[in-house]
Image 1 (cartoon, rainbow, N blue to C red):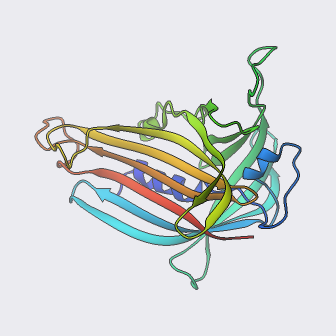
Image 2 (cartoon, rainbow, N blue to C red):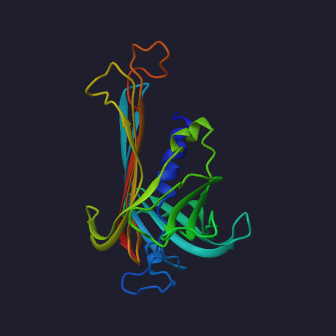
Image 3 (cartoon, rainbow, N blue to C red):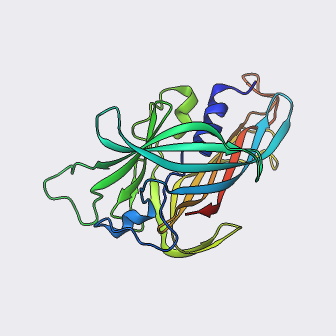
Length: 264
């Protein structure tokens, strides 16, 4: 059985990072047009092809799967702090044409960022979008969108919990604002990239005698569409010669890639 951290990671990756919707042709006015990289509107949806790889250290094998996920904004609610929020239902199916099954509810909350000083510097974020699932909350985006700006997107997660320790000290950064992007299925003209984390130590296929790990998280958003691409990787490797090993000298972890294939 996969341990809690990897079950959570797959749920987090597959269910939690895609609730940003708008229509294909109509621009939604928000006062800050950069918020349209994460538009919120009842009835909006995005459908994804999801490719997952889980690395099993006990058997030195990997399990590859493909599913489809659909995220739909279905209602307005209040979050645990009584803030106006949006309910996002997540549906899953094994392949196109199969029946959708409801698998998850996510709460998306627009929030205000309080300034740390009375005279904050230019381009200081004033708004954010919080993403709440399974008792965890991430600050997915901040506004206005300014290329190069960085923020602590996982500040509300208890990274002292060993299952979530790998989420500590992630510094989300905006890149490639208003650039085109092809996610492998569709070319999108106006996009925004969020590089959440990129960290690695060693590589077991080059040197199997030393510890190694890899953590990588990137999301790309299309203007008036929402998330169009996501890639998350988290794996660890402990060589079998290590007397303190918790593995058999094999990679343990996952990679998940989501690509938008349909939206309204």
